[in-house]
Image (tube, rainbow, N blue to C red; front, side, top):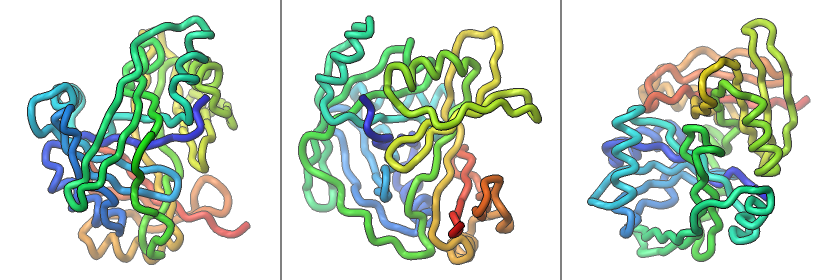
Length: 281
């Protein structure tokens, strides 16, 4: 049913300040700077080879403004939403209904670009608490317009989302939803004795949803935690980011064979941020 991790949402108070910070981190300019008129929000989008990152901020009164403010009031600025892409949202909803779940209506969205008056349109299906378990998430089908192409990245820039990390206290319940209902491929389910939990990897559109699981007796809850970004040349990226004023650890071998990693220590809106280079095997 799900064919891609469409994008991630980061909620911020000052979108101009956030745009500047992420531009310096990523080494690329935003692909889109605009607004959702009917929602009362502004956004700034960085487009990568396999997904995009959306900065979202309250602008005027509206349901989107209320949502952004409530998320920031509750959790602070930072990684706030996981958006899953489908080719046919009506078919996707019917597949969910056929599995015994019936909820909500499909809604329609529109965004306008400040810089060139471009318009993008989409359909949304917001997911119920039973599925999201505290993590803001919805399905999206893009219907009109597109983001500028993202195929040309400088070798010192960030080009791709390697993985996003979710923390959960109910791994079996999460598997039942992400694999059983969403249809995502569970590529790894591994117990990590060192810290007494499980690690799950779901693969979709050349990225990974990594789940760190520590079961407890509380109500099921999933939380977005951090992101890992793939780079072509970690040495050049490390040098550029350092010159931009970010504090970053030394480059070292990653846990996965044939990888190099470095962690951005400067605060990125409360988002733990890892850089990774995959070496030829």
